[in-house]
Image (tube, rainbow, N blue to C red; front, side):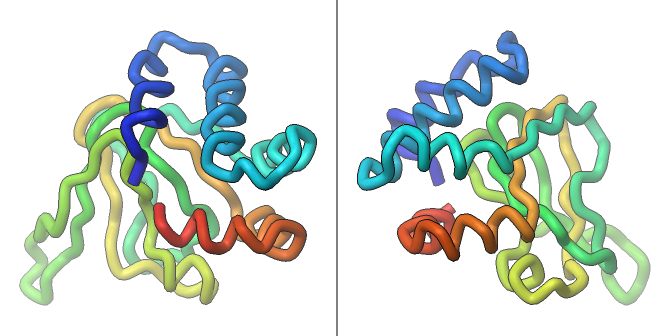
Length: 149
């Protein structure tokens, strides 16, 4: 979860362009991983993608392989699953600064147990499994930091 500094960085991100958000994401990672040089931080950030989703859209769908993990920069989402009786069960609501995705499914290249749906228009910044693995190999501190999200 984001601390107060990072929450403040992204407080106005709905009005920012994607390149402005990426610039703030660089600031976030430079603050989060001060042991990395500016070029190393840029190397980490280059693999993140910004996704702007309308309300009531799905970012992650139960039963599908999860190939990204991310953070909500703006908006509100809910984690849900379908019961054996066919009804939708809300598990958890997620807001700005919350990490999203099933970490174990992501790392294991497995199907998700839950779906993640936006409740309101949302901005998510996500990293692919391939770039995540690249960053973990090059920058071991990245494993520790991302596991906290």
